[in-house]
Image 1: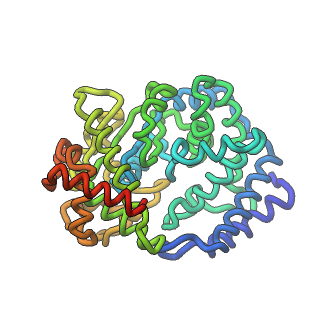
Image 2: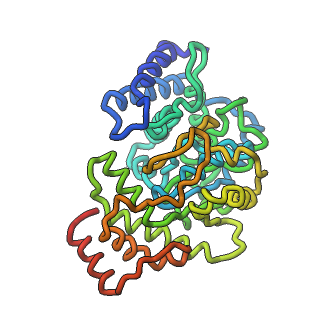
Length: 394
């Protein structure tokens, strides 16, 4: 089916955007030209989908989709703690539909959507996710639904799916109204790869969003069957990684206080929830254990999710394509490989004072989770925190 000149423009706009995507991992912000190309392409795709109308869903689609909607997995943890690795290891499993980009709905998108007029909400969310499906993190792989041809665009199909699922989910899940737009994204993506429609073999959909652990009450309130995989990592390594990332992307590290507070809060939640044995809705995973004992930890994750321990769980992918590690540290290995870097030195870019600051904010929680603790006197902790507040950093 041809949908007028808009459909004809999509391959050309897609090729223009493809030329703007970085050949290697982007070290700074995307260029204005890249962002403009993504905006033009996503608008053309969405307009074509609106002209064609919502994708037709039959009764089988509806039954499978509404059942799947109730069974999410939320992978969370502080930024740079290993959430991307866990998401990529789950990606290729045949019983899971794994969103290939951060969901970030409660952490950022929801506020932007709620500020829009009702008629613009779904279009904003759809165009945002179209850009994410083309380019999740300014690093290959790109074009996660494959490329558009003269006769077919998988991105128009995704947008039409969202036009269908958006109103259906909102109407069906009244008590889940806050999360309904994101559920519609999950169902639309689940129906796109491979054969048309949602596969009957799918047991759960997976969202990876750092700091979603700060919203556990809302997630479980709206989706009682949700399972949480909370990743923690040595706070010194997390802080060091955040510092490296911001210095590379922004030229400086100006958010020290907020980063330390985020790490501490995430570890505190892990201590509170991880101490309850036998839970069916929450699993605590240490990054260091995952990278040094992958068979054991992925076995625990498979058991927790009630899925088969398939070979795909040991090969990180994004939309089933081999993925590169999303790390701030020098890497070993090739795309799609799982390697251990957990025991290397991760504090080389931190001063003694910075390491003391990490201990001041996270020491008690880190020790409870099995991480080494740098002893600090109470007055030294107070002085370090006070100096950071007075400096106005972060």
